[in-house]
Image 1 (tube, rainbow, N blue to C red):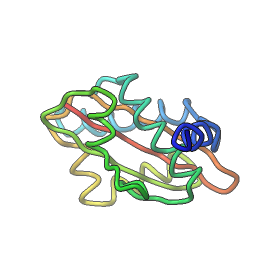
Image 2 (cartoon, rainbow, N blue to C red):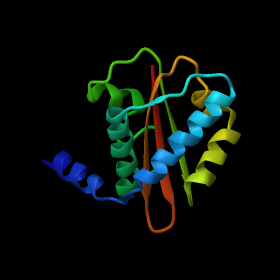
Image 3 (cartoon, helix red, strand yellow):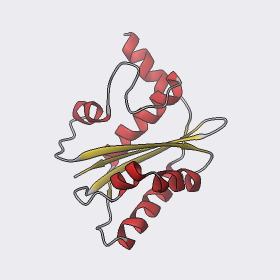
Image 4 (tube, rainbow, N blue to C red):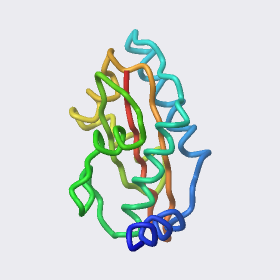
Length: 141
């Protein structure tokens, strides 16, 4: 029962910014194409995984790939029934999509995830709070 209550709170923490998630997807694919890579398909099921994690981070006041319960991105994907051979996750927190995208691209580890040639799908969530916006990108083959 407590888990269901925590999940319900997470659903209402912050405001979904789907337009920002779509803008991040377009920017991500523009970079991939400029590097000679195939664009990633926007996958609604991965978006749900990303959105749930973003809301959980906002509701429980943390910013990490691992939840306070020790649940990581691959656990979240498996629990949602998403099968993968290659997968990754990027997190960003900024005041807007452009700033978050710039920070991700300037980080070698995040840029590597964005330009991974094995990936074919991505789910992106953007959740706004009073002072900042949380972004989660979930990648998969």
